[in-house]
Length: 377
Image (cartoon, rainbow, N blue to C red; front, side):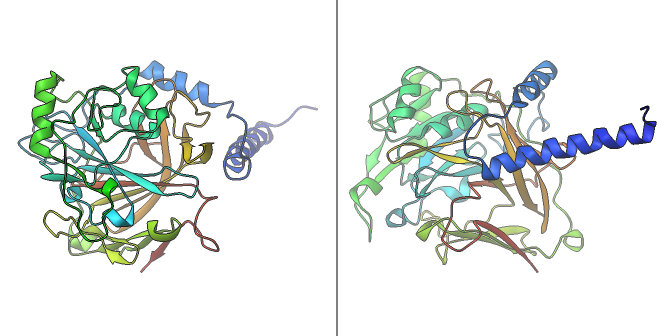
């Protein structure tokens, strides 16, 4: 039977729809196996140079991560690991970060942070904590020197292989930085493991003494001027219901054009200056979290060691508005760029200023609640 051109096109569209829907259904419902189509995506992006993406996204004088004009616009990024444990709160240094990555690190979805600095000096940095392997590839993707206090054996094994230039306050893998770090006196509910700190000036000195490159080679993320007040949306509240005391929310402030962060029902502030954390952009990524060993998990986040998944749904918030899209990180190389795309496949242009990236698994959250919800005004 000969099909008309219109009928044939309809069949093709239907097949494509089923394929895409089946792929996302596998992500949410199936918890094993591999995605057969991802290698073609990797080959395509590799052919166009998009895996590493060497074309600068911002002009000279503008930082690669925050999209701001600053004296240190060409400084190599510095990525530091932070605790999220409630005993260590409030943390020190987040208000000065260009980007913050918040990822689950245990089967019960305790999170950990990686704050990234380029434009600003953080001042006192802490509580510094140990590395997890999923952060290594993110730090490599933005060309950062990686600061941490020890690590899981999964992370330390990779660090000992020399996959990233690092500074380790615990002296158990990579470059020792114990002489540049310090333990502060316990304050309030702090435990001994919450007392690890490092002054940002000491980080710069350690990088210089170690002989690491100090200039940036990361292409960066594109930025566009923030919307005028009249053009901003009304915004709303972003809730990420990590279990227990990990839960967070961001409330949009239209006048400031920023998202005010609340942590376990308390305003999240920087211990250094008492400023409330208020990123200009929030990116919420859906990432599958698999148990790996004991207290350790693996995020299907495009790493070249354990992952079969390298893309997933994403939700972006800026200028009081929300948009959906996808994240993508090729698992073909540890230093491949982490991309943020809109629904049309175009790279997101962020508002200049801090970007906060939070990842969650839709299948793992507080009992009886959606892990992620957005309450528009």
